[in-house]
Length: 181
Image (cartoon, rainbow, N blue to C red; front, side, top):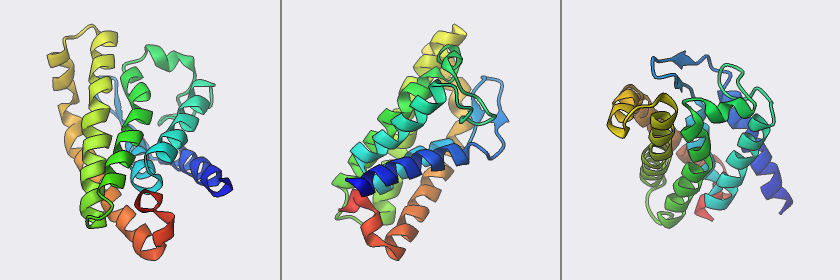
């Protein structure tokens, strides 16, 4: 139990730290950041429940006003920004990523991690992300989806990096990858 609490806090801190990498803002109002890779890693390493808990802790701290999102953003005002769907989707994406990683634990870890990271951390995350963007920006779902297309290559790259990092952690400390346990 104590180990799980520490890992959840550690991954919330990792997600926050990935926000220190300078953001690149696109015209949609949604920045390109490394934080979504932290969401993916939380799922592939911690598993579904712990990964979701780490992301929920991060989101809770952010909505409480800590400037933890890329560019030093935080507070309840985020719930009226174009990123609201992503904020809502982060814990769901971590859970789904972890769930898939847990179900594929008998599969090669790199393959399992890239599948889990892509399906949970990209496909699942984009669903509330696009819906939130459409609502806030007053666009149709199709228009909001088109606004998200420039993000896809970077998110696929993050899924690949997640697989490589998860595999490296597993090779170095197999018991640290709880999604495999």
